[in-house]
Length: 371
Length: 127
View 1 (cartoon, rainbow over the protein chains, first blue to last red):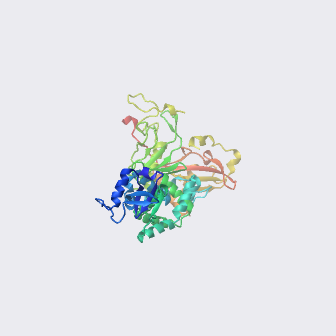
View 2: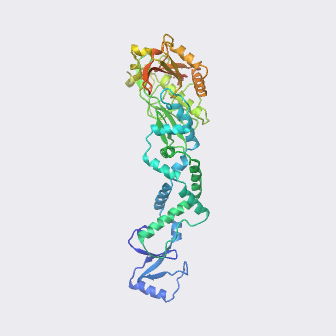
View 3: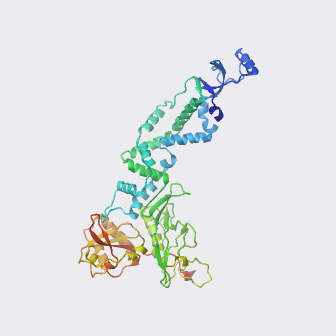
């Protein structure tokens, strides 16, 4: 099929059917003569259309029904269909990732309720509460948002194309015009088929368009720069400002890891000798129950091993199962405090001691952090 | 700048000791806290802890400031004041660094964190 449409052949469209050029050898000529003399086909698909037609001295044979071809294109060429579908959805900013994550409740809570606690919001000595819009302004100032998101924000803000498609779908108007009867180059037919398939994609995305339109109408009064920031976050699923950040969970859809960097810090051992610990990210998952853990491969007296994703050993702390901004902030703070200030050299609390103890228990060595 | 680096830059010269003192009490690991400004002559000779108490007991706070005080007090239940990575003791000047406003006016700045301890983990002897 693909080869036919990628060839240099001229094809004929007649009453919704594609007619292919007919090879001409003596045997075929004989068959045509027989056919034209009135012998009926055994199973005619559409008796009123001719099986063989002659145009500009060439014979063409009836092959595919265009409607059937477009309706079944997804099964005929899944790869090409997917590409066309994605291209079409991108054109109207309807990609599933952006749609699904454009400021869902979890993201909204992280952005507007948790982030402000951990980032510097005011310049100089002013200390005032800032609005959601001001938070987006601040993110815009502190984050390098690629230019393409500003362009996409314009598409996002333009509701006319989606409204038009929706209206046509509601009025049951065909989204594409059938190609004219006659001779067509394969390229021309190829382009028309692509447009027809994209129109079909839009028709199948009826509910999604409605949902997207509703969402965009809600954000219609929002500044395009803010839309660009939100599109960037929805697309990348992550953001980091002033050592605080979040990143979309790989395993759980719609969930995030919220983290804060510790910065470098010093812990002292039993003999008051100092150990300089490198920065790490203490994180909490929005997927409960959410004990704080260290994202990087890391070692610390409160971590059992020296690997990634280890839960911090906490005392008298049970994280709340309820996903609320104050719970996430509190859990993160407990984790950060434990890491930076929790170790007591004199008590040697934790899984490991900073100074070497002459006991026969395999433990983690911190000598390389000594300063 | 990390706490470790800041400690190296804590020395302020004699002339700077006459500057106003800006105290910021920050709850937990928040980025911002409650700001209080002490004019020259009003803070010298007083312990930093006393200044903190005075700031936290100030009247006529805005709603936003009251929420910060609540947060600080929650952290202080069994918690402590830390500045530059260590528990505060002595005077403000021992923790102050010289900074400038956008208008170029100099002041001394002392950030203090109210941290609720989290002792994390088990004692090594208990293993």
